[in-house]
View 1 (cartoon, rainbow, N blue to C red):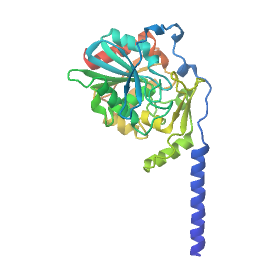
View 2 (spheres, one colour):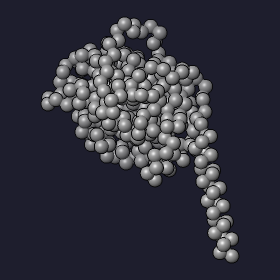
View 3 (cartoon, rainbow, N blue to C red):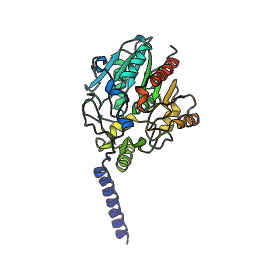
Length: 327
């Protein structure tokens, strides 16, 4: 009898393990239809890309390149500016110019896995590597000098990354934080289903890999889990697919409420009232319950990508930065 019970348990374990392995191996992210609201910046066809500063590079601690562009301004007012999902520093041109005109020295960066930074498009080498890269950038750019007021500013996924840093182990890297239309979490009231159609997520694979990571097993984290709603191919200008470890390194994580609650540095969120990916009206009530110290500004008429391109939105962001930096 005991032998039969043990045999049944063994068979059940094999079935569960086999199903778990099948989910990881075969559940790839779906490719959603192209979504203009996440894929095309308003007015970008008329941009003068000759205005882009020359791309520069420094080496991360593992020797990989980290690319950035500098929009020089006051040396004591530094902003590290982070792009959104699938993009690069180039997408931040108009916002960088607006901040530069307000006096800031803007360092627009391309995160590892984007824009030629790192060693592979859409991937990092380990969970949390983006945090380490940011520390390397601050030091390598000389922003850690006394007398420099440092602001981390990010858009969309980069806004979520900004909040991740504000509530994480590297929070002391910056004096304050500004998140533009940030991605908070899949189960956040601010998030529309699949981010308004922008993200195709391999949910079973994501859950399985999260369980492995939670158990301290960094297996299969180079597998893709998100495909964005763009028909762009992987290149130095676009990153359409994220691996598990890149996505997890950008996000606040499953305990996003605890991360937000830990934020003590001055922090502001700016979001457009007509954001197509997120529920703009949910940011204030959500944060009032979790961390009322985080300020929220709603820009009337602002759309998602319009926040980094339309003058009324960029001016609202400049005003929010000035309040933070006490300029």
